[in-house]
Image (cartoon, rainbow, N blue to C red; front, side, top):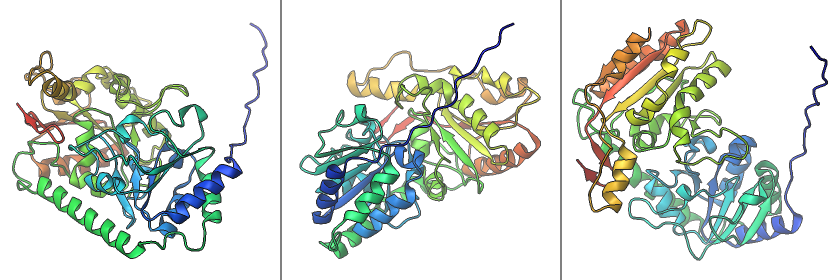
Length: 404
């Protein structure tokens, strides 16, 4: 046995950005005719949502969420237009395509926030791009930037706001505000069309269909063909509009040097991440979403969560009997061919859950899913874990448009 001295925790003052770069950013935004803000993880981590909202309101600028950071700006705000990228908001893509200045606040501009989707190549090629990120190594990697600011999103946003010219946001304000409302209205109609094709008693079929989430839930999802459409589902979109920051857990980092991505890593951390979220927030219902392929990687955690000292969680598994993202890519890039993407149709995760001592539920309609979610979230108060298996068809859906 030896005695050791643990090093003290070192706290660093966050960088606030260079004065010259901030002044230039304020000048560009003050002169902009169609400014757009892209709010990323740095806004959540830095607690900069109020500053982001203040900038948006001063400029009458639409605010897009960075891919998989739906909680980086309140969806209920009239200037919120939803997430960019894979299975994101068409409204966000259509609006940012018109930008003459983009303020990328607290984001490394990951590829899934910039690559085309729904056939829309939305990233504006002629816009001035102001990128703010606390990690200088990430600035300018994805897109050319006009102004690079290495700093904390909250501090930088405050300084930009203070330096805006008196006329900032005035150019075409009325027309811009009307266009934001019109574009978002059209997108909501699209949601409604996807969601209301069938009655709540009809089979869910596609993950576009969904269920009302109980108030106060902390949803977690993983990337992939089922997880991402779940983020777009009309009912979940409406629920996530009310999220506060740090309530949407999606493809979490597993270390300071590992960027969020749609690599294989997020497939196996979904269940562990929601277990951790529940342990850290025992009074908050926590609900996870995953496709059946991805969930299969971490299904061993069904035994972990059964330990007596651990809390109860709710896990929703979209059962479409395939590796949807991989099948989609195979169909798109290999002349409609796919191999090795089909899963065993006889396996029931609901029955596996019961075998592990948990509650397992299999649902086929939106009304059944709504009831199951409410029951499962309430059961978490009694430390009961529920696995809800949602039986779907094999539609890959937008943006691929493929069906098998």
